[in-house]
Amino acid sequence: DQQVKQNSPSLSVQEGRISILNCDYTNSMFDYFLWYKKYPAEGPTFLISISSIKDKNEDGRFTVFLNKSAKHLSLHIVPSQPGDSAVYFCAASASRTSGTYKYIFGTGTRLKVLA
Amino acid sequence: GAGVSQSPRYKVAKRGQDVALRCDPISGHVSLFWYQQALGQGPEFLTYFQNEAQLDKSGLPSDRFFAERPEGSVSTLKIQRTQQEDSAVYLCASSLRPSNSPLHFGNGTRLTVT
Image 1: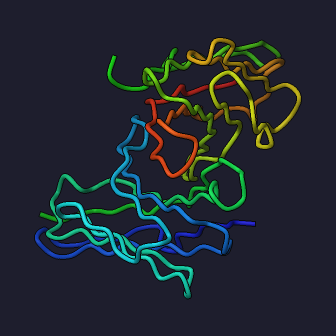
Image 2: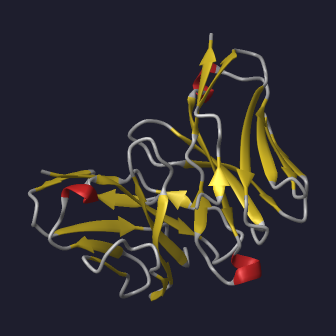
């Protein structure tokens, strides 16, 4: 049972435009969400997080939106740059509400930013 | 070092051999996680430590997998009698606090079982 889903395996965007990466989840106990970027042969790098008490968090070019009623979050990258080309993972945890500590990851979306 | 360090980066084992993978977390981080990542998939949870206590090992796929963190810092993931299906990248991550705290990953160990 995939509790965190990234339904788009890949996405191509022109440099300078907006990249929107989507993530859906099924467990209503999730209360903390994160986005990671991963380059080949490296570990995932933390980008941005959001707690369930918020619906938006912004850090530079990266903004995460959370829609709890739809159990959906998205990552917006504006403007997109060629160096943003990587695989992006969303992750979720329910540690405050359920006492479990694990973070559940989606299967990833490969973003390609075209110069 | 400033980040999470894992060794070795690459490991090739013959089927049936035992392997040990090491993780040096960020100093002062309470929480330590092990994940397994197969090609084209997201990281899959294996086990979690809070200091030296292993609080969750629900993701370990079989009793051939064993992890420890005896002094609440360095951790070792051991796989006994390796099988081909164990081939994957094994990622270690640490976080400052047990909850609502980002995981910081190492670069992983790529295990290939032949």
